[in-house]
Image 1 (spheres, helix red, strand yellow):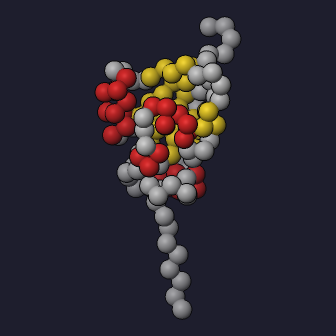
Image 2 (tube, rainbow, N blue to C red):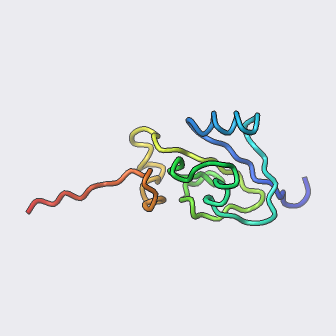
Image 3 (tube, rainbow, N blue to C red):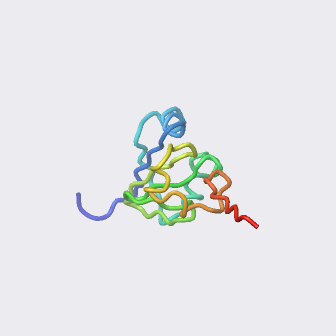
Length: 111
């Protein structure tokens, strides 16, 4: 293949896998784009509520929804609910603190 693709390869995990398969008929989905767009913009374009996404993976790295996705990238939407230690090990906690779906650590200082 010569040159850079103008498509984004998109996947979903957990319930977003089912949603994407039902809406688009396959997994992964290859979506043609004209230029860079944020995870928020891509979610809206695909009919995915941002509150249903905790983090995204872009080219194998965890990112927040505000991250810029470029033509040729591979990405996946991950909803809230990924179990246990993977959340911290993969870096979910620090990538999406403004999203209500994200796990919050409560600081309980004793007085």
